[in-house]
Image (tube, rainbow, N blue to C red; front, side, top):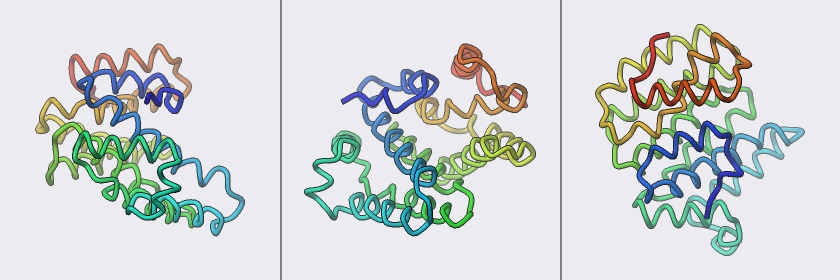
Length: 208
């Protein structure tokens, strides 16, 4: 099942660099990320968001099996788990971080969990991956929340780490290449974003 409708073209471009057999797994992961992130945008009070996110937490943990089977994102994640060996429960940290976000905390933990699982779906894991995912999450989260100093620091730390990771993990992090562009041109056209990602894929992540 394709989840292109859940993604901006830049995310679809990043996934296109992954092996064909891993692309649907990554799209399912991105779809979950979108579902979790939008909770804070659509609820009127934290308690309502907690109820929605608790459902995801239980579904990812293997509970609510019948309801999960009727949810297209959960179905896709279960397919991804069978294909990649990455259990949906590993995404519980993303849900818990989104719960904290409802009460004013940063979403960095949620984004880092998604980056880490994406890398695992591409066959890479370990302390170096976790550290790079955390730095990448800081870069993309803080650039989205208009905190350029924190975004630059996160991006510079990520760029220093990513060269030590296996090349196969690149598609998991390719969207991080948009951070320098967004700092310079927050409203950059889509074609500029795509070019920035292509350059990162071919020549490495740019300096900031």
